[in-house]
Structure formats: structure tokens, C-alpha cells
Length: 233
Image 1 (tube, one colour):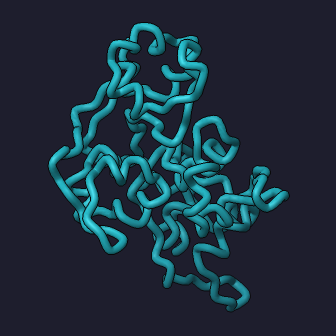
Image 2 (cartoon, one colour):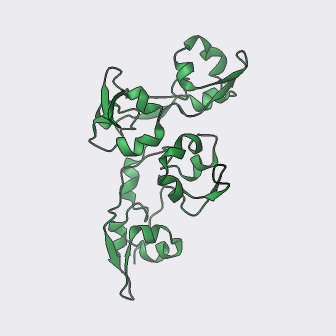
Image 3 (cartoon, helix red, strand yellow):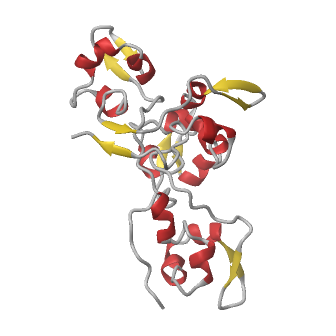
């Protein structure tokens, strides 16, 4: 059998857990995937879940999806699916081989390199995070800083939290993609702007599917892979 190639995938770590204050116990990425109402809090860049559940939290994005209805047979005659395989790392070593059906049926679980080409390291502000502003004596967010460029000289320095959270506003990276400020999208029974969607990362997975209205009108918020990003030296 052919060995599994290794590469830098954009995936949640389904075997690691993080503490959730609201439940008082450890939870995992599968738990977080099914509870978008917690994304705004737990998917901040300073939270443990942000690094453990990088795809759910939008730290990175790929466009490699698995067919929830697909299944494959085991040597003992049992039928399994990709979710079953994603939760059993020891079986991934046995089944994620290029000549096994799981390799093509479960590309994300098996880290098939077809997923890598669409991996996207985004240049965006983290609009769910906050940083402390000394001269105001309180926390502010990137939206606040974006509208007050006169404070960029003080706050957009590498040693300040604002530089880490507001990468695009602070010029730490650049991309060639921008949302249409005049565009409106229909969602949740109303009509909203791209900025409305930007401030609600827990809705991105649902609304930013390829070909959707939001994906076309809000390409930066939805991390369209055509939004090329690069770090500014």
C-alpha cells in the first residue's frame, strides 16, 4: 500500500479538549462544531479552542469536504463512514492509504493532499477579540481601531495585542480582496451588510458556502481563496 503523504492541513484536532466555563468541563471540536452560539466566545484568538479547532474557528480554511452519506466496507464486512474514521486515529493509519476507498471518500479525515491546495491563511482582523487601550482605560476591538486611524501609531506595534488581533488594520499583512461596502445579503429573515456578517464568525460556516450570496458579495469575510494574502516584512 502507498503511504499517506504529510502536509500542513487545515483541520480540527478531534482528540484534544479545551475547558468551557459555561459547561464547567472539557469539550472537543465536535462539540463546538454543533454549537455555533459558542463560537464568538471560544473562537477568540486568545482562547485555547482557537488553536485546537482551527477550521471550526476560522483560523484557516480549506474547501475539502466529506460526503456525510458516503461509506466504505471493512475486512470483517462492517460498513463505516468518515465520521467514524475521523474519531479513530489508529484506524486512519490503517485505512488512509491511496489504494483504499477511504482515501477518496474521506479526503479531509485522511489529509488527502487535494485539500491542501485550497488551504487559506487569511489576512483578517479578529473582530471577536479585544485589546486594552491604556489611554481610555478599557477594552476595544478592531472595528473601533479601523475607524480611528489616528491611534494606529500607538497601538499597531508588535508588542501590543492590537497588532496581533487587527493584522489587516495594522498592516501586518495585506490581501487583494475587499467586501462590497454597499452590498446587502439576506440571512436569518433579514437583510444585512458584510460588516454584520464579519462581526458574527459563528455564522460564517453556514452562510459562506461556495456560490452563496454571502460568498460572492463578502469575499474577504468569507475567506474566498482568491483573496491572496501575504505578510508584510
